[in-house]
Image (cartoon, rainbow, N blue to C red; front, side, top):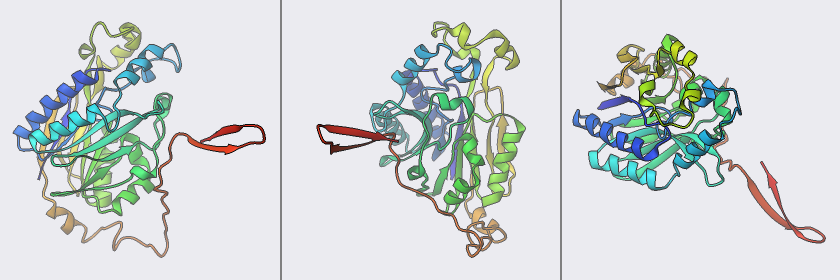
Length: 323
């Protein structure tokens, strides 16, 4: 099967314009024969850049308000648009979004959309990294699932979640064959991690980053000069997110990438038969597993942000809120 890893720029905190970009980029990938099209982490409506360029809580209310206004309700109009894009081009679409829950909490999420059935799965990042915790809530085990497609089982984790070995094993045990890793991860060390995962489970890995140059952030963005301090841009050579996308074979070899400092869609043909033969020597959840020695318990129940219970007290009714 043919996969496309779309390393591209979003339109920062503009859901509609970014969805237009998704439509354009998906059409291009489908035109090159891609059956699976993978977009970067939180591509819609883009990375909350201020968590890396400003001190925590330093007057970012306007930026967060813009994020909340442009975050994605799941399901909702944005997911309907993404489903229509997948259907129009006959592709499976995997894309990172910032998901706004009904309570108001925002999550780093990845959506899986089928060309026939629309939204079929969602994964929320279990542990936001560092400053990400100032904008995103924590996911739970209910979204740790692999998706069956006509060409194989797809699944994966988001950015540094990929360093959580127990989460990886839980997905390995579900038979994942094509691992998607939407990320913001930079440098050679991240590429080495993608290669390690491919060898660890003898699977294909698609790691995909955004590529965003300072010129891509519109000049009228609120407090743009404070959002993108000159000294920070100089250190990044004006690449806010320089990209680092790769496609990796089950033996850890690079099929495509890494691509940096450019917007580019990586295209690769994957022979899933290689997975069957490579697991002859190493199958971490099969013959190379020791369930008599090791056990893993995974809580797959959903954990809503707040549970509301009402019960009578001596003089009134009260609602008790607990995490």
